[in-house]
Structure formats: structure tokens, C-alpha cells
Length: 133
Image (cartoon, rainbow, N blue to C red; front, side):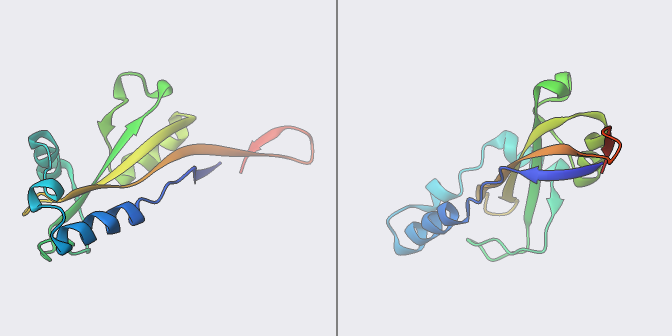
């Protein structure tokens, strides 16, 4: 079995456009640093600290949240999962969508980083049976 991430969308251009507008003065910090209180609380208690500095306040307080969604997840759809939990879920569930959001716990900058599909990939063996990769 091989877990793959497909249909990944990179939102770096959108992030760049937002930051340029902020630094040029055509957008306010209220627009860019508007994390919902629930998102801030989730970042505080469930976020994974990164080594990336915040693009707005330059402090090293950026955390990533990974939200998993999918029909096969049932009651667990829409919950925050860390990387280890996603790795464990790959053997239990076929395909699900993951949304990665970055949040600064200091200035409340937040941005969707990259959503992607997480799926199990099987290869066909030379005997005609599907076997895990």
C-alpha cells in the first residue's frame, strides 16, 4: 500500500497576493489577520508548530492545522488530525480530503495552505490480483 496525495492545490499565489495588498496598504491587518476564535483555539490546543515565521508579524508562531473530510470517515469527518493520525488513517479509510491551514498564534494571520486528497494506491500484481503497493 502506498499513500498518495493527489489533486493538491497550492494557494501560495493567493497568499502572496494577500500579503502584497497588506504591505502596500490596499488591505488592512484586520482583513488579513482575522482568524475566527474557534480557529485560534484549535491552533492553540491542536496545532503543530512549524519552523516558518509568520509573514505578517515575523514571529515563529505559525502552526498548521490539518482538517480531514470524507464520507468514509463518518463521525470523524471534519476533525483535526496530526500527521501521525493521518498516516494511521491511511490503512483504515480509502480516500479522504485534507485541508491544511496555517495560523499565527500571535497576530492571528491565517491562510489555507493546500488541500489535497489522501488515498491508498494499489498496484496489480503479475498474477492479476490487486496487491498493496
